[in-house]
Image 1 (cartoon, helix red, strand yellow):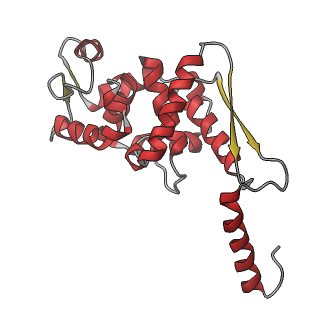
Image 2 (image 1 turned 30 degrees about the horizontal axis):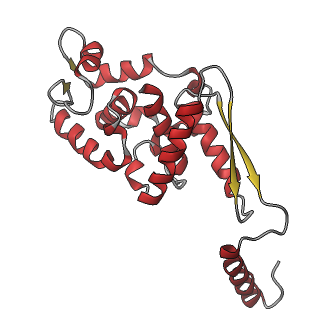
Image 3 (image 1 turned 180 degrees about the horizontal axis):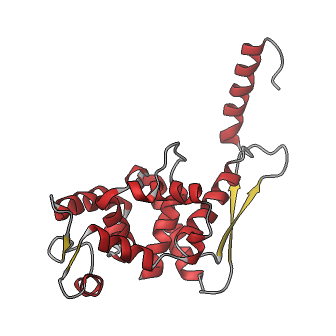
Length: 224
């Protein structure tokens, strides 16, 4: 189950459109850290992008004004036995304890990421609700394939292909490798691929031609 949760989060990060802002861990606050805790230890349903806003709402209510998580507050988000193991004798987690839980189980591969890249990945984990349904469904198929074929300690190779040769595969492969390292699965390696030179699928030909004509109209000459 843990493999599926981590794989799902990794694929969701891959699906997000790159953003321009990111934050350092010290600035995120108790709600984001609690969200990370659920993404790491929560139920499969709680990390589903379809339930992302619902999960955030439950966590916000659970934290309240004191910023403390209890077993009752995370009911449905985490298995009771898992929360009890993390919380200890007092059966609750304050912000400092949540942070310690996350730091204790931080994957070595995430530690190897550039600090700014890791901060960018941190930001993406809070935006899974922005993924549209079509991409969620496609991501779910990729999750199933990875879970079926993944073996710890053995490399698993995936190739991202841009059907229009517009460099999207490079971005996809980069984000895939970042996500795999972030969630502690460095065995998963993404590579960039494309179509044969000069090939344009029918659904891309009109768009590319329109772009070329538009550039020519603006420049007063031929497309460059």
